[in-house]
Amino acid sequence: MNGWSPDKTWREECGVFAAVGIPRAAETVGLGLHALQHRGQESTGIVSCDERGDFHTHKGIGLVSDVYDDALLASLPGALAIGHNRYSTTGSLTLENTQPLRVVYRGGPLALAHNGNLVNARELRRGLEGSGSIFQTTLDTEIFLHLIALSGAEDVEEALIEAAKQVRGAYSMVVLTREAVLALRDPHGFRPLCIGRLGDGYVVASETCALDLVAADFVRDVAPGELVRLDPQGMRARQALPEADPPRHCVFEHIYFSRPDSRVFGDTVDRVRRRIGHRLADEHPVEADVVIAVPDSSNSIALGYSERSGIRFELGLIRNHYVGRTFIQPHQGERDSTVRVKFNPVREVLAGQRIVLVDDSIVRGTTSRKLVRMLRRNGAKEVHFRVGSPPVTHPCFYGIDTPSRRELIGALKSTEEIRDFLGADSLGYLSLEGLLACEREPARFCSACFTGRYPVAVDAETDKLALERLHRESAAGAG
Image: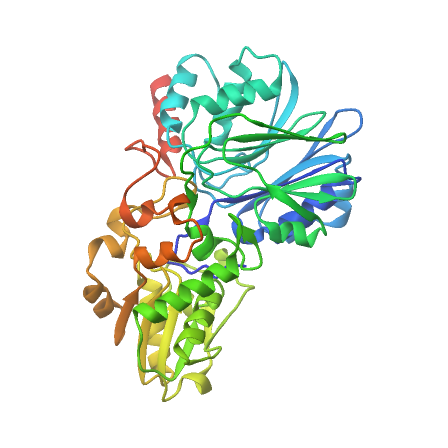
């Protein structure tokens, strides 16, 4: 699980998983969702299709382990199933907003699970509501279902392609029909999506770590703009939309989101993070005694910094993995708050030492500040903060729940001002040039959160709750 911290609203988006041609497919999907828990911890859902073509659904608020048990998964029959873990990047946390979304239209039942954000969602939804469409959720995902239903195409694949041609933004999705699972990725390939072989069937997942857990063999990634049909008879692929040239993979998948044991965008996440740590040590060396990470997502970066600098790596902060978000109360004081709940210092490692504290990013800066204070209270002689990415200066609109620009410390303060705010002895951010040099094909990555150069034009009103506001506006107008 990634090391989420309260000021780091880099909470991703979502994870999707599908199983095709596999007996008791829902059980396999449940396992896959366990592996993808780090991508969404608010709610989860599974839809399966049995031999008669009937759909079976279970959804719940909470972690995978809270929502499913063996008996429940066994009650979702069939050799076809899709699942979704959600962290809300659009729409609020409700059971109605829990995916997969399921509908019945003239082509039969359909279920869809989506990772990413559509940047023209408000525009499309206004048009759809104006023509009589009734929405049940405040998710941009539901727009796909309405566009499919309005398509004149008789075949669901063609209807899905027609829908995809009308949307802009990020989508890695799986669609369940009575006969097959369709996997589709946007032309820029913002979010990962891969295919694995399991016995005589297939699985589709947001990350390869989920393939590993279900003992599936990695086949390949779904290419940007590609539609893949998977059914009990095999796999068929087509280029549904022209691939962007170049594609724009989210660089934060490698910095923070994906698990280090996953292979994402053609590279092992741990290896990329080690290279980031090496480059960070080259760009920002310091005389120190110990390198420690802000666990867990920064561990590989810190190890890379240690390897290149020759400064020993130690476990100076221990993360409590079993604290839910609801345990953290907003009224708790700054010194008490969430940092002491999430992290505990190892005083024996810290006392009297010059510390290099390595994190993957700084968003608002409040948690980073508390961590520096914690290290000093536990005897650290010096604290040198090193960050495995450039300053985050712009929000993401492609599937990440980030604050607005006015809340991003990197947009508001200089590096020296941030160092002073954190209370660190020194602060070093990895340069954008250095970050991209750690990628094998740097031109294929999106870095809009550092530059403000968005590869897909963004609606000025786009944010996490844009469709919520539109829904209220529509309701007020109807009243």
